[in-house]
Image (tube, rainbow, N blue to C red; front, top):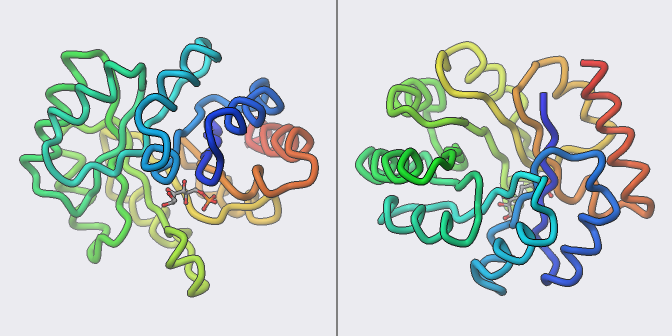
Length: 210
Ligand SMILES: O=C([C@H](O)CO)[C@H](O)[C@H](O)COP(=O)(O)O
């Protein structure tokens, strides 16, 4: 099981500072959608240059033009790129095809997918690398989480790795770990902590204990 740090509400210098603090305890650093909107793919490029040994995920939440957008994120140095599960199959296929050419990976974000089980089976057959259940900020504000959806994809997904994101904190991490996803994605649970390094270290320890 791996740990991904999601950076959403920072600029590039702040992102570099946070990653410096927690780098030994994470496997993947995510350049979140708001950061890409504010800073562009330059944020991916600068983080990859600064931390070449960390995998970098570009959270583009691609909805169309999968091949082209994956190509641009790959040029910037992204190792993993996100595509939305609600997109057309042709968009996901285009993203996967380009990722294979560029030796990159595709994560499909299941945010707002209504029938998680049925769509996860379809997406799994398209050759994606990760399928991620996700309660976004707006769902979190309504008190929702994706724990049940994680159990669903664990049951039906046969090829892709499974991931979960959305409001995961140190206190809720043990429940997530018990469902055994391949990847846990944490943003505010680390970035809002007073001592980010201590929280990331504790999270890594819990994940290692399995
Ligand atoms: O993808 C995300 C969200 O849609 C904002 O872009 C976050 O990176 C994801 O939800 C993880 O962050 P936390 O919910 O703060 O853990």
